[in-house]
Image 1 (tube, helix red, strand yellow):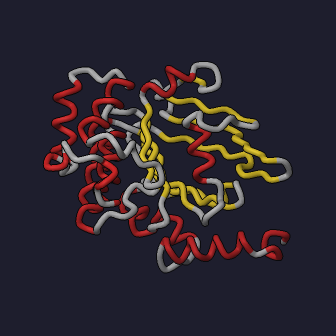
Image 2 (cartoon, rainbow, N blue to C red):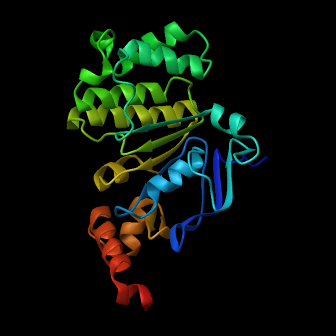
Length: 252
């Protein structure tokens, strides 16, 4: 049987700022239909890694391939089937919800765009807000618009940076289920960063613990908890983060 190429392949990824190594030799893959959690304390290098995958930041070293395309040489093809959502990256606030979706849909050359917009307005409970300027929506509503935008082009690679931040628990649960369905039914690969370890344990097939720009642990959430004798993924996260931030532990 032919081995399918991963949707995302990151190899030896580095990003330095002078003497600071923000990302230090990171290597991992995301397969089609797989949700991989990228977790770690603030400043671990998660967002820097995602920004390099998106081509927003230039790599210092290493390679990134999306859907088989090297992003350094074929950026347009690599990013054509990629999309992104983050709580810290709101859409233009002076445009209505519908206008935002239409503009980004045109950027991604989405076929049957009007029908796609109607589908996403319904899926993300935004029908009543279609004519509302995005900037006056609540933070949770804006997050839903950002997620709808991220689904416009039916991406093969979906990058989610704290995707359910500022959303109430009931809505967050629906969105998690929807993203799991996107991975399972559409075969999208998802790279998901979150500080919510309950969320990571619920939705992620694998988790990568990142600290000081390096991956310290990798594996299935439940298996990692068992292997390290932790009570939960959150307890393991705290333990790993504390050890990584302890200079004596890091030196030993």
